[in-house]
Length: 201
Ligand SMILES: NC(=O)CC[C@H](N)C(=O)O
Image (cartoon, rainbow, N blue to C red):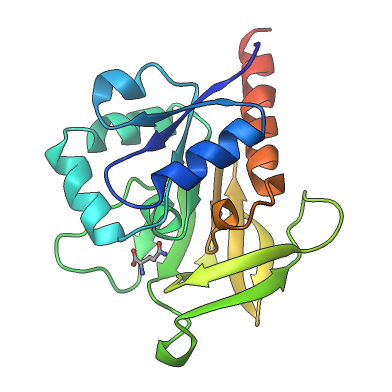
């Protein structure tokens, strides 16, 4: 594969920041809203925002089922914050009618860090990212209550799981796209390249 084409689900949330971070990590990045656009990308980022809104809009735009199908088929996918919630097989405290795409055997708790700690930054050691810890920006962030056997915990903060990988799906509670440090996006782009290399064998 030459340069992977990575979409950013552009229904709501911080889409632009992810497009910039992906381009900086040597991918071609483009917004995705519709099933036809989803069909044209090698991989997808699910941005932060409001998971209840993203869930509703995904159903409205007819992209929820195609998203589930592609994630099940092994398309590499990376969710930050609300995007992490979208990748959880289960939400502990969903709003009524809130759906997820699923793909990672984990239970997430929304807005988990509590009111006093709604937004904060913390240094986070992420497995697979070499060098200094990542500056984790947490904004009304979820944490992961528990993971199933196939999910690998990549990072914890304050005793809570904040980054997980299962196969081709990666999720972080925090927002690397807001820091100018593109190492987590580079990790994801490497996952996309590795998948493409296997597929072309
Ligand atoms: N920064 C974020 O993505 C916030 C997530 C939001 N609290 C939610 O439940 O979807």
